[in-house]
Amino acid sequence: MSSCDSSERNSIEVGQQVWVLRSGGPLQEAVVASVMKSSCNNSNHKDQYHVTVEWEDESGEVLGKTVPIEDVFPRRPGFDKKNANKGAFDPFELKSDGSDNHSEREPEPEEGASDTAEISDDNSGRKTCEICKLSFKNERDLNIHIVKKHPLEANNMKVRSILKEKKGSSNENKNLNLTPSLKNKTEEFNTLFYSLLAKGKELKFDEFESAINDFTIFLKEANNTLPGPQHPAVRFYRIRKRNKASMANKGYTSSSNPVRANRMAREKRKEKYQYEVAQYNYYNRRRKVVRDVMDADAPKLCPVEINTVENHFKNIFQNVNECTRNSYESAMVSEDILTVDIKTILEAIRSTSMDSSPGPDGVLIRTIKILGVATIIKSIIEIMLRTSYVPNVFSTGRTVLVYKGKGDRNDITSWRPITVYPMLRRLIEKVLDRELRSQIAFHSSQRGFVKGLPGTHVNARIVDAILKDAKAKSGNCAVAFLDVTAAFDSIGHSHIQRSLQAKGVSANLSNLINSLLVNNSVAICIGPHKTGLIDIKRGVPQGGPLSPTLFNVAIDHLYKDICDPQYANKFGYRIDDTLDSIVLCGFADDQAVSARDEESAKMLGEHLHRLRHFIA
Image 1 (cartoon, helix red, strand yellow):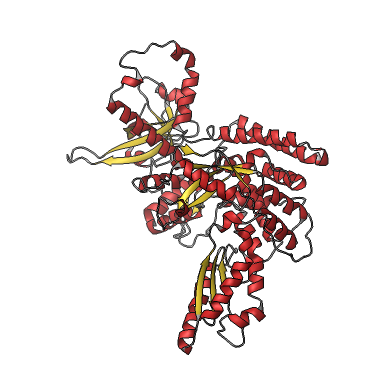
Image 2: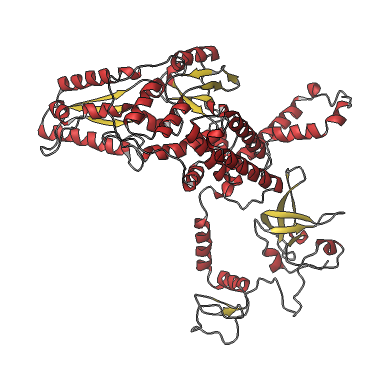
């Protein structure tokens, strides 16, 4: 096989698809991972280049090696690797017209080209440089010219191409070729759920339940069949399953017995396993890799004994809260939602971070994004809206404890329970949350979880203005900061349901939300330890997409009552005579009460306590 010149070798770039020579075997199709230059001190020798290439074997494992650049050939149209192995074809040979096909020396401009040439392509396909107006045969020659003669513009072009890539595109927006089996199976589920939706009132819950279970299993299994590194545990399991027959009859010697393996060998295998897990997580959940590496020595887990944790949260979650208000206002009821916009579902999927943790079912958001199952989710949501039925697989969650950042770590109250439900349920809740927000409005003093409003910043500016005004006038002012303990975990489901009805939320949306709140159970996980399933009979799950909106719905009456102009002007602090007094600034379950004096602040605090006793 003839060799190519050094300029062609220098054209090898990271990410380029190439053929790699292998001793005693056919060419290996691979991708360039890096190019390294080795300088020689001897003036009689030229600089040497080595290329690191990677490829996947039949099992999906990523392999790689470093070879001299002379053994690497760019993949070209018409390049027959079989003939190349016989030495009958040179991928770098000249064109039939005798011109150099791959030289990176600056191409000669077309005759007749001038500085006044028009910036356009002519009928022959020639390309014109927009900077100096020189004309070239093809786009490749034009690009080489720009790199050589206009390096600043070439760099700007590269920057612009990078900026066009969406954030996170390295994992979620690749043009991946799905296998025919994945495509066919996805289409089968699309047809199945559409047919279930078409049944209307004749739909049986068992059919829907079975379809959801099968779809969840399909998504979980698809996690390990998509392009990219596999989790080492899955790969080891598949290898064992494939070689099960041969391993069953294998006799262990003293050296092959895992129990007798020396310590260094075990540590080496452990390090390799951890490395492969990090590679898998880097491809699927990068934040987890960074967290594991950066916080390797930081105490993360709750040190409280698992039985104590279980008893504590059983006392909170399993006690039904039936407290409701004496009366609820009424509003015009919105029309039932019969269909959802596919754009809303696509936005819910797109806005979900690739680092989002999978639920107990093990389904990753990356799988949902790559498979493109938005139409399936649309059918599922519309079935749930019509029936108010929530499949059992959506009702089981995993709760992790996150340190609040203050208090004794050995005190269970210093840990916040974050519940993670299945990924499909979270996407459905995102869509329902958008529908719910379109039908309701909150009091202007509630600035927590209000889309497009920097609530913390606004509240801080208001409180700061009150304090500065009181100081400037040498007047009295009292500001009290209140926080409801375990507010999200305490609100009664009956109160939430009646509050939704009072807001005029459409009946089928209200009923479905109520179904999502009841009959749930969670297992609290602390490292390898896990509690039994705990039934959830009160509160909204912290970490759920619907939870912030439902919490605001449940306490909105507090703001309406205490911020009533007559009440506010009596006890609140007035900055300007043309405006009502400021009495309450809220951000979810945190409130800042402002009053004209200490006595007024006490009165406001007592009033707030009486109004919200029913959520404790």
